[in-house]
Image 1 (spheres, rainbow, N blue to C red):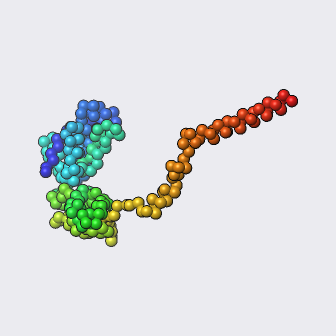
Image 2: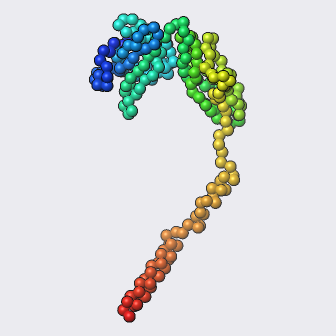
Image 3: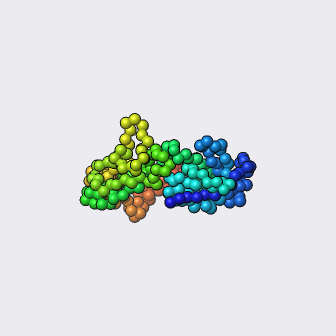
Length: 238
């Protein structure tokens, strides 16, 4: 899927200028990187907001048309309003077709529901991470990396190096790093010992006084208080 975005150059800068721009339904942004200087731009908010709701938009080579010239870029960052559905700012980075890029792409987990660990052993699929750092040329950038959990049993794990990457795509790892991506785990169950311990801390219904049972005790306390008061009055009279 190809994403095309129209943009205009933005001359005015600063907080006040950006605020006025947002009031007109535009989003301030910037294009940087490559052999050209950074350019401040303005984009249509509705169009950008709609694109941001698409997962593929975040891991694709985008085409931004500025002054009639289209440039391939990557979405690098965007800021949202603290409580409004409003994009505050967006950053795009130019890409060069012959230079590798580093990018985070989403992971798509498949077949966990038919795996022996889930279907036969009652386990639960546990997604440890939902995206992964990769390195590739812009034209080789995948929209996602698939994680097939179909053969996993309870206690099994899939690591980054177990994944199948498209040709020209490599995971970005440090030295001997090989982090876990997904596992099949046994859901936590309450044991009989834990239930017994919990029952001991809760008083039985027979131990909790009812209103009728509590009433005599309250009356006895009131009577004792009255007697103490009477004795105190007699002493004062003497």
